[in-house]
Length: 113
Image 1 (cartoon, helix red, strand yellow):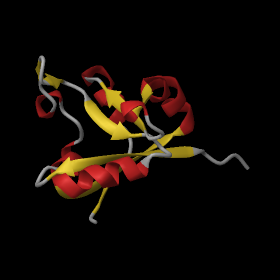
Image 2 (tube, rainbow, N blue to C red):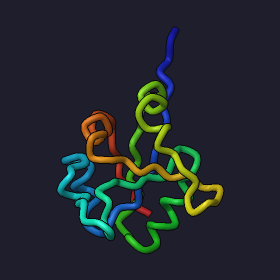
Image 3 (cartoon, helix red, strand yellow):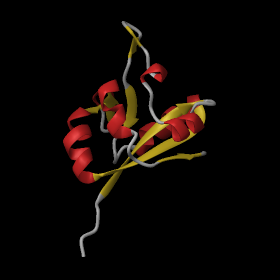
Image 4 (cartoon, rainbow, N blue to C red):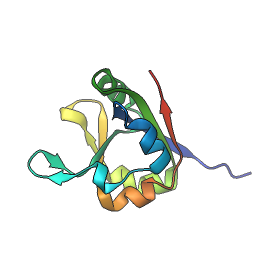
């Protein structure tokens, strides 16, 4: 029997925005591109870095959004985006607008804290 392997990525959402992301997915309008302050990317904590999203939740206070992705898709599209967060042990992903359609294919769950 072949079982699908998955990974979960995590995002702390700003107050009042988490449920909309669950229902409508990630839209470019929600992540504007206005240099130098806004780069248009959606930032997530990588699969083994949930603690990073929980740290941001202390400020954003809306919960932690979990997106579960099959491992093959993650490895192909999202793993190359992994970077150490501020040079530390935690790993972040900065997902650009062009990958939102792929990201939106996967289940999203908002977990309150």
